Image (cartoon, rainbow, N blue to C red):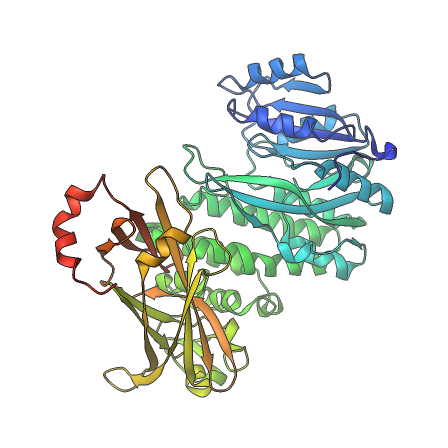
Length: 545
């Protein structure tokens, strides 16, 4: 993106930065806004009565930068909506954009958005937001399918997919448009205020200009002492707040006569929100799961069958199970189904054409089980990793794999944060059945040379820790294939010490990731831990490499 705006965009944008107890990070956010160049007429920083040194940092910056104005709130608002509304009220430029105090704008973002809004006479312009995992620095594009190409959206059909993007920060807004429709954030302690604000924007049916460039960097700090609202999901109150915000968004669409957007908003909830929280259930205790189940069932009771049917397969299956379940049971199985990648674990009931969740819940239909491609099914590939080899077992799912007949598997060794495996192993699969002969599976064994991989991975931290994930692509006799992550067999994960001609010794620890997949943590050299593992080293020194 160009960082020099054309003359017609100069001075057209006010960037509103909200801050609360963020003295260490707010300066970086302010500088990223000021560095956007002449397109930014002003940066309006709103301090929400911080208890640390944030207010002083902002005042010091304002003394150095004439384009920075600071609004000091007399009382803390309890949320993000009120300070953003204060920023809108204080802004003087024709367009306004929002920035959180712990995020940044990449170079050229403001100019790209304002230029698109001006060129297409669009009250709203939107671009790509990336979630940057810190400290690793790994970027993940938010809703990438929405913003792949430049576009102008204005018909109801074109605007409907936008309900999947509930962020307010990757957009610029015409202030006159916001004023004309009375669009503001909810005041006070309203969690997930973005949901309601963006619903109000979309309900007003604006023309929207799409910019396929990165315009916002959302910093994700999972190790922070105070987690952001989107990460603080360990308390059921967060889920209650999210469902309440979603209901308010649906009601906004309905009141505006946009029943199409209301329906799309409910389907989006199943595809995104429900799956995101359900996959965390394995990390929660029984009381949390029971309360979550109650809140979820109450919320889903207002959904219509066409809205459920429009969701992707794992999401609509999850919704039907939750509506059918009369008590909070089988939630760990639901958690695995909603993970990425999704896995539907046994028991299986019915045939591919009439598959159901279980014999006890025949009304929880798993429609599409007989029609979906293998790549869209929540298939399971179990794995046992030992020094020198990896044993795989592809599990059948309602007879679909038995029909396709798995033949080969290609295992990929992927360094954490990478996009492509650095090494692959192709193996043949042979058919078998479980002890009672009722559950078919296909098994194979791949050689593993971990000491040859360690140099190709990315080192994390001072001790050179490397994290590795595994992918597997199973190819079947009928030409179909599917790719997933490996699921470790319970009780088989362990720590190993392997000799290495290059590093002397290699420490290997298997573990299960948050989504239930097999991963390994490796440390080369291991001088700091050698005394602890010396006995284990002697045990494995003769193991095959």
